[in-house]
Image (cartoon, helix red, strand yellow):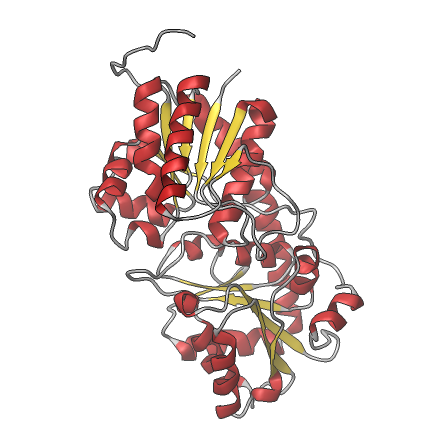
Length: 389
């Protein structure tokens, strides 16, 4: 039986990295058995976590120096005791720890990479870990190419495993009326809802929340039944409210706040189109964000940006549109086109769903992970075996 030590910064919050980690841990447990996968998380659950619990071996429950030191010590001790075959680091900041444990135990070290964390600068230990890990898993081809073009990695040791969604849970259908009422969502029967979803914070501005409001203001007068819906909690919502009012569209912009996980699929189903057109730079950008995939699984066209891995979710003009994040006029034209043309919107929604089923299902994710791991072998390196207890 293969054994895995999985090191994650956190798998409890609702961010994209945590969701990817949860899918990956679940896939590893499906492939090798629950007892074969030991999960150590830096952060523990809190008030903003997934409502459904997720089992881990241990969490440091904080970022203080003593908590981090305890995390490192426990991870090393677990590695020495269990002698895992694979050490997964779910973030570049844990890469050096994974490599050290792997070299002590003869395991294969595996590092997940996503996006902005690899083009925004590194701590020295993180860069060493990135360069030294035996294998890299990138959630998109864009980030994988960046690593190779930047000289940080050899492409022969980098695998791409796209993020995934559960196509049973996220599926087309009519939203529950109770969810519509709970969040104050404008009825999808009386107009066209354009949705974006995520953490509404200033460090998430690259996701295009302010630009989307500007785009909406451009088309609002020409498409009077179009509404803009922001789902997610954060301090940015107050500023967006002010901007909406200043642009004369305040009554047609809706802010839903935090979404309970049980209601998420119905929030997507209440929309007709989804937008997350991100830009890229230091501290900015996406690997392959999960929210457009979830929206597409629910049968709607998606709008994404062309500066990062987001574009891999879309075949331009078939299941959505890929745009320069700063070309607001082009975004406005695409949104107006689909808002007015219900038949085209429906056809693109069917193709969006089909692409999810073919390429982004959990089953496809698990199968890709299994195929990649079958090709990995223990590295030939010298290490000293510890005496058996």
